[in-house]
Image (cartoon, rainbow, N blue to C red; front, side, top):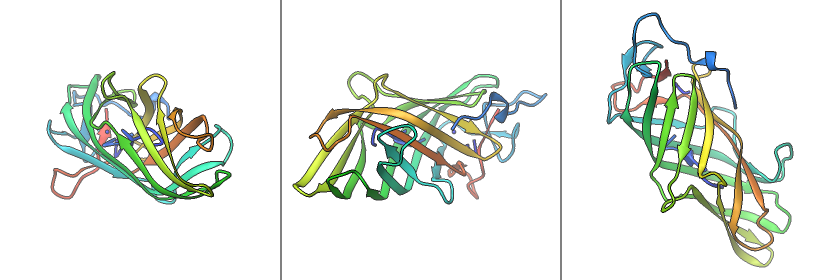
Amino acid sequence: MPRYGRIGAGLAALALLTGLVGAAPATAAPTTALASAVLTYPTPGGTAVSVGDVIQASLRSGTNATFYSSTSGTTGIRCAASSFSAKVLTNPTAPGTATESLTAQSFSSCTTNVFGTTGVQSVTVNNLPYTTSVTSAGVVKISGTAAAPIQSTVVLNSLLGTITCVYRTGTNTLTGTASNATNSISFTNQALTKFSGPSLCFGTAYFTASYSPVRDTSKTGSPAVYVN
């Protein structure tokens, strides 16, 4: 997903993450005069990423993946490490839409400042793999299914013992942006709603993360991937 650039897959990753990819304008993924594939390496309009290749990325240096209780606040869970891995399924000629399968997304080194909680045991993305699409305009969409919805499970330590919070997206999708300028895939305030858990689990978790650089690890040297 460009050099590209839970809870819920969130992620991602999550598609969430990932394995996959805040908002940049459509011009962030430039096209070229000559025909090229949607996903190329090691430059925009370069060599087409092969079907079956594995795309991977970790958090952009100096950033965290966050799951906050509001779009503007800082209460919730913050993870210092996260990564995704995705397999390329289709990579047509640009302009178009490439598809991937988000096969892995992990979160670790997580902390919480939610009232009544004392630590984070785990943040796990459930029901992988997720289908992922990347358009020439740089729109990244991670989609679940009715049988395997986008879901994340967060296990927290609390003053009353261990609690488990399960979150799902209302639309069964997460939407992000791929940017060639920063070689990133970013998600901003993607809403995940509590599916189950006690009152200490806040009702809505807003997922934000930026993954960069995005690389084709199936190729020698793991070159950067761009969107066209």
